[in-house]
Length: 239
Image (cartoon, rainbow, N blue to C red):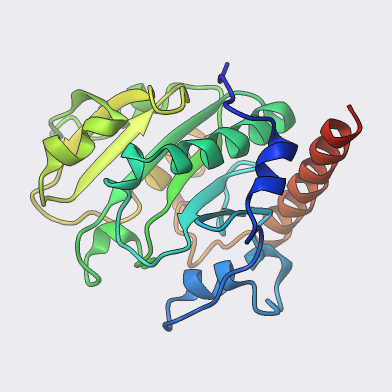
């Protein structure tokens, strides 16, 4: 369970720019987070603040698979992992996901270059929060035994990875105390954790979000999460 610094409703009221951003480049995620009349509901954040937004992932292999993205364009989250504002936001995202779907795992494909395959074609930093019941850590280790994994607290990623790209995964979300495993990459790798999850689910050929976007199920989850968020806000404001 997470210890929340403030209630969800209080946090929403405190953020004067809640759900209001502006796009300054051609990055598609920056466009989604700007919320400038997105034509596709799936691309509209189901929760947002001045600094972060949460969207349901295209190609979600399980219902509720979401991404937390900074509104500021950047390639990875190594600095955000040390910010209290990041964890306040992710705590609330994790709370909604856990109440709606159950236990979540988290992971990041940490890129350092626009051209890197590690970013999976999305050159904007994002943390995956995925409702799954199996150990993503164990499955990742078994999937490719040539990778060199080591234990890592999320705030230590910057020190361990340096300027190298990395894979980070944790089975349990524990806010800023989240602890998992990290592999520092010698070369880019695309959609690694999607491949691991798809393999575990018995659908290894459906890992690629480009060829299997699963728009219908992802849009349904986005609607559910938006409604759940409004329900939580309403109940806390009424309390």
